[in-house]
Every structure is written in C-alpha cells, then in structure tokens.
Image (cartoon, rainbow, N blue to C red; front, side, top):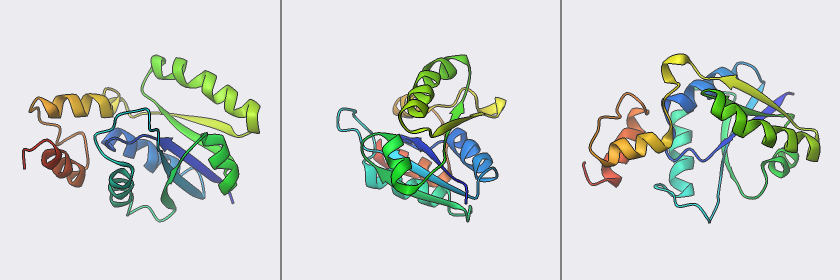
Length: 159
C-alpha cells in the first residue's frame, strides 16, 4: 500500500490546504494529514482544535486520516511506514523554502517528497493571511471551510 503524509500546522485549515489534500488523496492509496505540535510557535487554535477541524474538513475522503505528531516529520513517516511526504506549493518562494527540507528528509530516511502545485485560484491563500484578514474584520468565508469560518468568528469574538 502506498501511504503518504501531508504535514502542516493547519492553523487554520484553508481551502488551499484542502485542494492539496483532495488531489493528493487521488495519488496515494492512503493519505495521512498530520499536524505537528511545536511549543515554540504561537497558534490561534490548539492541537486538538486543529485536528478536529481537519477531521471535519476531510470527512468525505475515505482514504484520508488525520493525526497529530511531535518531532521530525521523517520520524513520524517511519513510525507509520509512509513512503512519501506531500507538500503544496503556491509559488517559487514555497519551492525555495521546501526544497532543502525535502532533500534533508530524503538524506535522513529515504522518504521522498512529492510537490503538488496549488490551484492557481488559491495561490494567494495562506493560514497567516486568513488569520490576519479575519482579525481585522475582513471576510474570509470563501477561503476556509464553513465550520472553520464559524470557529474563526467565535475565536475572534464575532459570533
């Protein structure tokens, strides 16, 4: 069975993330969407909330599961016997950032990274921008799943 991991912070999960997850789920027999826990980073949503939002957003994809992990993604891949890591690319800057990590991951464990370019209509969407726009009252309803939009509104005191 070909198993891949699609890692990220998903704080929060966006329609851009879901585009990559849906397309990657068609490429592999099993796709594990994994959200890492990094205590040094400040997050809007805690790990359990992010896992819950991801599970809800991916519920219609039968070959997709959602898990949390700590430590190196390659160690998690080894632990669950995943053959590949899936990373979405919005543009050249993402590639420049992701390529050295992909090379290091291959060097450490032989796990390959598969780059999936995002749909052009979603190339500008990022969790960081979604949070920033939502914080200042902008409409992000078209950039995130409806359940995530509700949680954002609640978290920011707009519900």
